[in-house]
Length: 321
Ligand code: PCA
Image 1 (tube, rainbow, N blue to C red):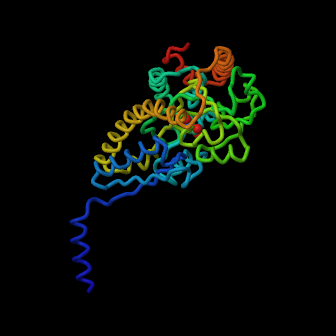
Image 2: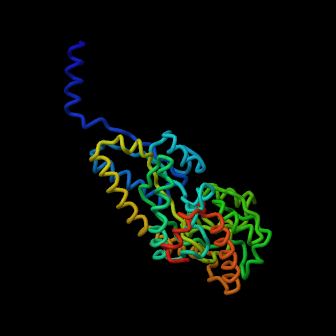
Image 3: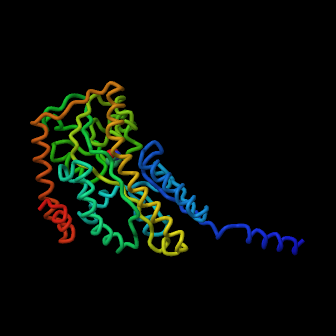
C-alpha cells in the first residue's frame, strides 16, 4: 500500500507543473467596477502565461481587508498583492496625492504626463516600505452630484459631503461643506440614510451606485483624474521563479494600457447611463468654475508647503512650476 502510494506520488510529481502558488489580492471596489474587471483580466493573463503556476484570486469590495488596511496588509505580507486608491496615502507623503489636486490635470493626456512625473517618486517611497508598484489606472474625471442645481460654490455650503480621501475632505471643507468619509460600495446606503447628501466622484462610481436613486443633478466639473495603484510585496515577488516574474510584469504593463483605455470609454458610457436614468446633466457655470478653481489654487499652495523636494520635483517635471 505504502509503495503504491509512493509510486503514485512520484507519477503525480512528474505530471504536475511546478508547485502552483495562489495569491490573494484585495481591492476596495466591487465587481462591476472597471478597475476590478481589469485586475480580473490581469489575473487571468498571469494564470494563462504561467500555466497556472501563479493564480491570483481577487477579493473585491473590501471583502478581505478594509480599504484603509490594504497597503499595510501587502507591506506586512498578510497578502502579496493588492489594489487601492493611490492618493489615500497623501497623509504619508504629499507625493501620493498630487493626482487628486483640483484642476492640476483634468485631461487624460495631462493625467498620463502627471503619472510619468509622479511614478519615480512614488516608486522610491513605496520601495522603502518593501513595496513595488505594478501598474496604475485612472478613474474618469471627477464630477459633482447634488440634489439640486449648483450655480456657485455657495450652493455647497453646509452640505454633508461624501469624501474618499483627505484631499477631498479639505476640498469639501473649503467649499463650506461637511465631509464624511464613505467607501465606494457604501455610497447608496450613506445617501439613503441621510449620512451624506452630495458627492464628487467619477461617472463610473456614480452610475455603479445608481446615483439617480438619491441625487438629481450631475455637474461634470472634471476637476481631477485620480488613480488606483496595484502594488506587490517585493519579497513575495522576488521569491517567484524568474519566468513567472516576467509574466507578471508583462501582464501588468498590458493591464495599465488596457485600464487607461477602459477609463476613457467609461467616462462617456457611464455619463450616458446617468442621463438615460433621468439625471440632469449640465456644464458648470462660469461662477462655479471660478469658485472651484480658487479652492484648487489654495489647495495647491497648501500642498507645496507640505511637499518634500522630491514631491515638488513632480510639479517641475510635469511642467506646472
Ligand atoms: N471612484 C472612487 C474613487 C474615485 C472614483 O471615481 C470612489 O468614489 O471612491
